[in-house]
Image (cartoon, rainbow, N blue to C red; front, side):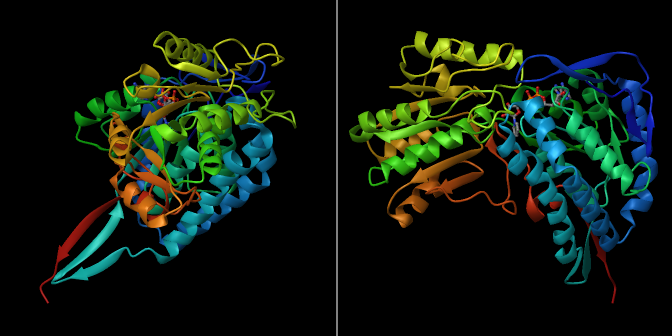
Length: 475
Ligand code: NAD
């Protein structure tokens, strides 16, 4: 059992104000794997005060010394990479090997990357008689979800620290242990007290208190569109800067000249990654009418290959979902897809055969003949559920791809690269993969429409934590 009974505030592990705790469940077997404090408004206030006191000297520190801290944090996380991979595999359900590469590997890389970015970043430039300065935006609050828990933390905490902001982190109550490992690393590298603070607890209690706090300047949030809207309302009362990374319902648009087998495989992998609990999951696969039967056959065959099992087992390709609530939600969507008349091509709402007892397992599912108006094509499912939507021609395909309240990601497949790029430019989304182009940690990440606003990653993520100031000079 992982038992955490303290919060990290002002450089020390301190007892929370209240006595309430939160049980954290192991996604693989449903058992309680540990407990963390359920912080409250008093804890939020203590953390913000600590961050405020630390801000002045941190913002005035030189970028090179901040870079040094970021490098040390990256190295400290690296030294605990196996523990991180295992902890997150159990919190979230991602198979262990992949968890090592993605859930532990990406945050380690991102902390180091921000040290590199700092070395080249231009903080001051002249325009006419003005000196334009980029300076730290202030006290930053980071509120993060459970699906890529430490990655999402790193995409906020690393650029905030790089910018010279002091930070209060409120991680997901469903996957909080990785954040404690980060706080232990931060403590071990001797970051000045109050520059980084960790408060755990539920969103409406501690999250809202942080967002509404008068001494907070910036809020960076990743999570559901529902919570994002609430946070925007609260932050508006004191005109705080807010960056929102929300949900998605991304389309994979397979053009009629694409390599169908490669495109379906790439789409299904993108849809089932982390058991579908990925905000950029390619959940709507658009195929030409003429290729529909073949695409359906390929997808059904590939889905069978996603062996469901314990995230720590070697053979597992598809781990469990992260929680009982998530399991109920995803099964509900599968039932709804059937009820609304989609064709069940693979999987279904029943528990997968042979999956470990107590865990939150769901069958890799494929629906055919999906209409874009159906619930399964409109709402974010956050499970391994692919919808195949047939289309008549390129115009209709682009229209369907863009007919969504979301605009986070997408994919386009064609043997003609120029055509693929032309279509990709027409997709209203923050990132579009062309013929399976690889993930790039320096490219801006974020959404259009109800997928949010603001960008994370690379130099674009750093800019979210900086203000412009111009000095009008006389000479
Ligand atoms: P969630 O919105 O329920 O919770 C996210 C975080 O917000 C948690 O820390 C939670 O405690 C906190 N929170 C909840 N309500 C709050 C409130 N009223 N005030 C302040 N904080 C509050 O989301 P989740 O279930 O943890 O994550 C899944 C969702 O996140 C999905 O919709 C997914 O698409 C989205 N997501 C988006 C991205 C992205 O970058 N665009 C990345 C990952 C996840």
